[in-house]
Length: 438
Image 1: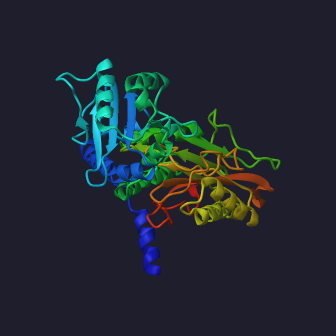
Image 2: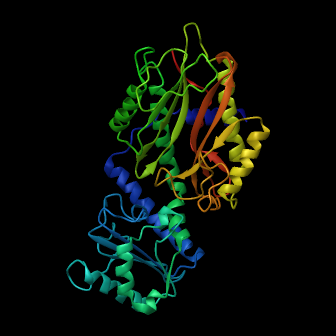
């Protein structure tokens, strides 16, 4: 057991390796795409009893699933791109046709009636011919009232599609929303090593931001830290999928929560509690991390015990949540069970965890929203499945004795994944102690 603990600690403390070159990244991403199309997609089409799936996008108005179906060198649909996925059975597999656009590195067959690229009415006529020749029993399209990831077919494109297909084919149209949702949601095991590396960068940048490298107490403000994070993420080759936030809590004369505004810069002083929310993007993967920091007062070497205990309550909430995350349980069921455990532990907390991967707020089951602790109809009714990554996002509010009983907010967020056996694991590690500014 000691060897295992030492190995885990060493693996989480390994320095972050630089991102590969863009060319190397593209080669890795292309292999991920191949595996998703060849391994994941056929199984999902059969699971949801879909014979044919149409994904139709116009340039700069792409279906949310589009970028999970194309090569890393594809940045937009080509005028209009129509992808046709036709399940010919286990022996022949899923046929992949591109009506408009390229072959995505040979992963799609480009369908043309003529030597010229399909465009306008020619595309719709070609689609009608493809559908008539294959005569599928069902044709799935991306329309959903519940899930944005399965609602990518625009009203204008649907009108033209219905006109092009004709009455007999129109009768076969179905809203197989869980097909699109689960295709985007499902992660490949092959993605995890690179994701761990990206997470190391996220943790490393936060550790540097919440240190004397960036913060000089009494001089540095919260916006200085925010823009340092963005600039240094960019310098390391990363994007950020949302504006980072750095919030400051100061000991007040009364017991009210002294969460300083995110809108204006707040000077960081000794004795302040810091909170960051920060997400990196690279290789069409996204992270979402919240950590806590503390600015030591003169003569202090550690935060006050009340703050340390507050962070421990946040970690206990994480433990309760992960213990309840089992395959087949809905996000709403997990939320209710975990919140009951939190209340039984005497903790005042809120849970608002979400899937992550191709998108920051990813496809899959929601486990609460910060203002919806009774569950989220529809999006929270989706069951948990192996192969999904989650941002374990939650917060505790704790009265700190050393702050005269003042309430302090502890916001925590770390990535975890459900393995093929349905067990939850941290992608890298969680925050075990406050980042300290001396």
